[in-house]
Image (cartoon, rainbow, N blue to C red):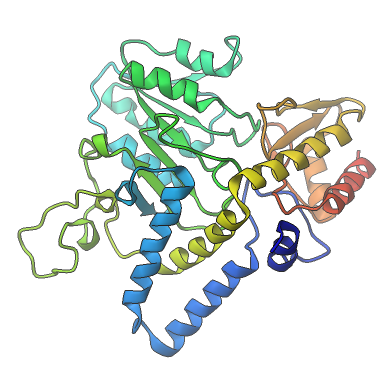
Length: 379
């Protein structure tokens, strides 16, 4: 089946809605909705009769995630609730020493800021770096590191500005200087190719509900095997032990895989839904998806570049941007413009002081054209 045929089959959105908000929460593909319906029907008629089959689906999802990020092993994959939980597992798990610091940017979403700021009571400094301080944003981050830098944490794509970073350059520096490298990949997984080994990442996390086209309430967490045991655990339960099925075992031991971070019952509904969504990502291919997304973003940029007083907040040159185009218009109240767009069913976001459009691979030129027509009528 061609990509165009897949798009027609999988995406049945309301014709009155112009959806340009995949950097927030994405609509589901048809196969994901069907997976949830089947799972609900099975629960209704059979309860957990087929739980062993559900566990097979869980194992399948771990394999899908392994392929998506090129993890060395499924043992490196944990299924958590969200990006914030995964970041907190890292932030609270590291054995910090007073005087150490964490390097990040001043563009991060609160999920990749608050867990690090919470380490202040341990004497840990959180450095929020202006990414324009050096010739490149990557160099700005590197220049902010010193002998006391324990970890560098950054988003692969910034949620507001849409800025893409050269993660391989940052990761190489971190590995060479014994600095842990943490990547919040929520704004790139499902939109761009990603290789956790090639970028020397120690930690990677992302919710399913943005570019991966999945549900809220389930997220992937990758932790490099060599440092997995060094994270102190703060959550305990039946699921995170080696002999998880032996409920009478009093001499318990923590699992030596990524399951050590999963304290309780798995989100089976989320697992079925996320697996269905990732099956579409795999079928289309991340390279193809990336090409479509960048083409859509470029089309938006080219279509609005000549609007009087328009200022781009996001980059306008490849490879500095992906699926996020953020802009402001001088003399206009962006919150008011956002309200007008939403009222006219242009589903977007008000971020970084401007309007954020975020088309996915399946977003049609017709949808973009209609959205831009409404934009121009309201400025």
